[in-house]
Length: 118
Length: 113
Image (cartoon, rainbow over all chains, first blue to last red):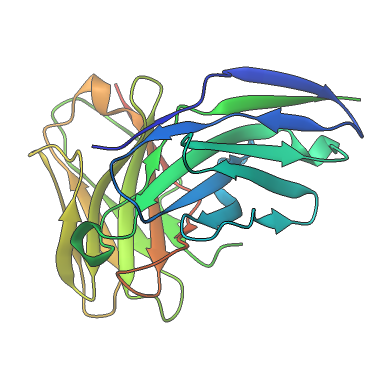
């Protein structure tokens, strides 16, 4: 079974600065997808960014980018120019590309609580 | 707004009771996933339905069941409720059973007293 580990229960950053959230995962599979989801106080789970394991290029979405290291099984999220609205729980998630023809759910880490200091 | 609708938003019930949570997926999405979020277990995948059929099971208890109807909405039934079942229950939907992105509803907060 796959596992996802987020070793930082809480991170704090000054507004406008850059912060990196860590995520490692364990799998024996070669093809999979990795995600970062954001959960603000509203509880809504919002997809931040997605990475396909077969792609070497790191995904980028505006101020959000990832550092995907497949050999090290590492998938960190970098948030540039942090804004107050970025304050939330951030979850790293894994999904196999093969399981049941893509029919299994996401495996989540425990989350990192990101605090933005004004 | 993700387009996924869950009702009710909040539910308080007593131990031993049975409740039904409802999910309407995004228009056009055929796949529905149920997740449980609790302080103890974090976010866990429970079950998936695709076009009316059960497709995958995760850590779903035998006291829990789900179904997806012809109009593609889904219901999660929780019975013989225990205090430990108190959690946030999410529904997510995606276009196909093989997906790269799922859209989550706002969740149903279940409190068992």
